Image (cartoon, rainbow, N blue to C red; front, side, top):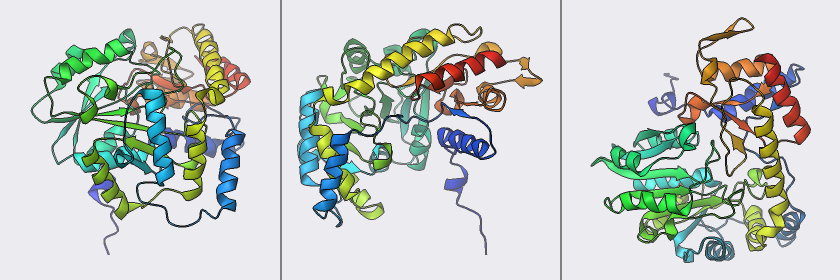
Length: 394
């Protein structure tokens, strides 16, 4: 019997963030003292008021199959959250709850894309965008940015990337991996280009919405002319430290929401019952309830930037959100460190893992081969020790 996997799987990349985390765990099991700065996972415990809501759901016997698109009371809470935080009016039939925002993104790609449709991805982009688009038989079109532009795509770049085959634009703000945040005026400038191409659907990944140090978040769906052609993706993993609870959601034009529900009904059905009830408590709470985490991330960002500035060869900008820095380390390319020749960002990330015992992620996985991603979702002592180790080996 032929045991070969499908071409679909053979052509898919392994998630670089998960691969590096697995490698770090393997080295820890061998007895090495690895500091992990590779995963995008808050190191805080879930807030107690959310735990209590989950316990109450268990006591109230939330154990049956859930509606494919989510409980009605959760969808109402999401609708209220969109109105409160984003000034967006989504009815409950425009909202679909999924098993994490990653599934939400995959669902949308499968519902909207036909073979050969092009999807514009400002690079750097989140590691899974590219392969999700390919799985849906779309064609990723990368638009490179650099540290000089704070890793933001310009309207001129967007216009140049659009072709008759362009079907979608995907981006995140705050951005994973760069931490960049598109302000209202920057989004409005991109919208001026999109107005000339009304057939293009926008996917706005806003999972890091609340971890924003600029003092305000703008949803592109709220800009005039964009509501009916934008899918707003969000979830509770990052801001509420609920990565393992696996709840994401979309607010979308109704035709996309219906298609997503149809697809999900054949793949996973509804998301976890207890987690959904806990998320109601999370979303109904004022944002001030999680402010302590946001403030801590802000302090850590400033600490990491200060420490990295002391390392020759690291070029850093000031990320305005999320919990990552994305330094340009291309000055090391072509050099030999402790007998190891550094030809690219992947070499550099592996060098740091093996010689500094610090796990980071190559920027190549995010569409930018000159950088590495460093997550500061770790304690201050860990961050200080990790960057001291990096400085020592470079």
